[in-house]
Image (tube, rainbow, N blue to C red; front, side, top):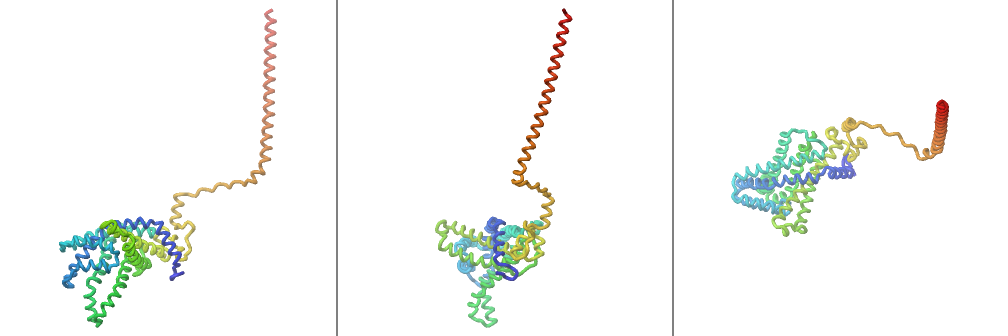
Length: 389
């Protein structure tokens, strides 16, 4: 099955193959570790910000609204929402403007580290090395953190001030009470579009690849859909099967939150792998930048660049480091060896016979020389005895 120029099944196989080979599970664990240090400060910042929003929209229990939203409308598993609500309530008992700046700084620092880990994972997915200077990487990570934070703030505004904004807009266009129903339907597509656009921006700016920006990418769409499916499935699992809270108490809620963050990180990086496979297979500009441009060619029906899957530059480098060694001469067949055995045996016997004849001649000459010496000695002795008499 094809969607445009892309073969769906080979693309999926190539994506999951790279997903395994690039150790995305380990990279997702690293991202989750950094997210743990940013998620609670971010929620504190958003809740403190909601206090200022509450001054604008009127006297309301904004913290209660945030709690209700996290438990009922955010889509998070209930155990995950409870794990986030408890520290927020404890910290905001003495709410002040200082929490706004304090939470913002902590969220920005933790989010920057999480985004830096995600950028490293995207470089692995695209098979490129990080060559950007540290200040540029830090600036990109901070910018992505701020952009995603703005997206979360906008989502929060949809829920916290959505009714008032909706009533105002409804008064302008004459919808009246029908706005409540319309808003209940429209807010989810708006959130999906906002998240997909934010992820597309992240997939574009994160890896060390110069590629054109696209508002929607296959990876961002798949990631948002899988986020929704995984969150719903985990909600059912935590509610009916896991029993983390009943078994471990407050620690169970934390474990549920960590597991949920890990699954979300896996999905996020899976979307990056999908984008890398498609970009390497379809975009010539991207092919020129990656270290292994042939690895995703089969996913889009293109011809692979060789059986080894290496680029010409990589092959030239390998040739320079490891010069070609001449192949050894082929060994003779067994039948040829068997046919040559009789002639080899005859040659060996002839050599032994010739060596034996030469040895007998040497021994005879030695014996004759010894007899001659003995005769000379006997004659000399006889002559000497005769002279004495």
